[in-house]
Image (cartoon, rainbow, N blue to C red; front, side, top):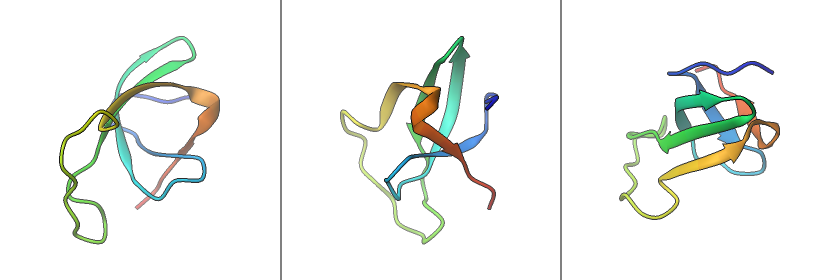
Length: 62
């Protein structure tokens, strides 16, 4: 699957939605999206920004 900056994604098995910041080969840098679709805001922590393999992500269409 192809990802681009600005895409909304979810880590497979997780409910939080992230926004794609950067794409380099198969590694994707993501940051937590605030607010989430349900209106919740999440504090910035060590999992708020991550570099992750694209195979662990799924695109979200809101």
